[in-house]
Image (tube, rainbow over all chains, first blue to last red):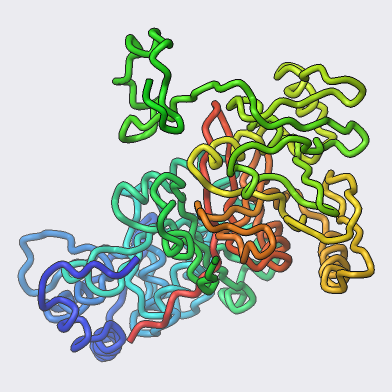
Length: 249
Length: 256
């Protein structure tokens, strides 16, 4: 599926302001002010300056917490978003109950204790974020994330993302497949599964370093309608983008 | 009476009162194939040892896209025989005598699952054939000169001296088959094509695979993809409906 830009100049605007550039700016700005986020249940609350709130929004990290406060803005980050800023971009500190967690491992262990499948989800999240895709919560669509090629104000999301691993119970029966594909299709997205390979048990999981031993395989699942495809070979090969178009007589 | 393929004959009055507002049961556009049951014109003889029928009388163009040719003779698989019988195009005769084998017995033969095609496989076969697609068994050539016919129950056919190409493919396929895989590639599917030739069918548009009661595992998909060049479609048959899903490995690009 080709990206669906939301308005006429959107694609050009996206080209002019690539996500990677916005992320670098954000990284610099947050590091300069030594921003620190506070762990609270399954979120991280970050106090930032208005310009920084702008930058966070431009890169789609977090949600603005509306408040009357004018000098500072409060942003609510998910574990994935916070840990990406903290561990991958190294531009925010994390504190718990007033105490700064100096060691990345402490944050990792806290997050893992609150959400046992955090390691798997974070690997999937950082895999796509590192390729400069924008990821947001997919809860509205019954999936884990939705992936955008650029800012959601410019483009519709192309992929609804489900995270899987060897242990997980996702998509184990046919009705799960029918359901996920149908949901995705009804909102004009392709279903993308991110299969995280790795050992999710044992001591190694206590260090974020274990992330380097995980790999992610991407796979799309789509439904093909035989009634619609009789004339046109390309509708079949469209479902299988890595296979070249083979001509029949 | 209008003579178009699939038009209902005016003698079936019960069609008139058929409710057609339940879109769960009908294809979109209301284009349910209406079958005309002519008295079977083609004839084939069932050969139990082969699990196939040898065609003796051919009528109609359907034989350009049905049946395999071995040493000049045409044979059809259980699904082809059953489908053609269901639509009234073919009569299957008994091995010993000329009595027509009734549908009931053909269904029973299919249930025995000794001829390489299960009921689920057949539902897909029937559905796609009805839409005009051309289907052959994966791994079995449409035509081989000078080759004897052998049992088509998932084993590779033995090639003869004349067909060297077949030897290499057979060995590769046998090696591939040694990997254990719960999913099976069953049919090569071609788009509707009035100029289809068994002597050079070209590559299929896709290969219909079955993984049974559960969706295919990542590993099974990889095993099949290594073995088969064409796109794979996994079929799920339930409640008399066939759905087709493709599972494709991709690599999202790194964005600017």
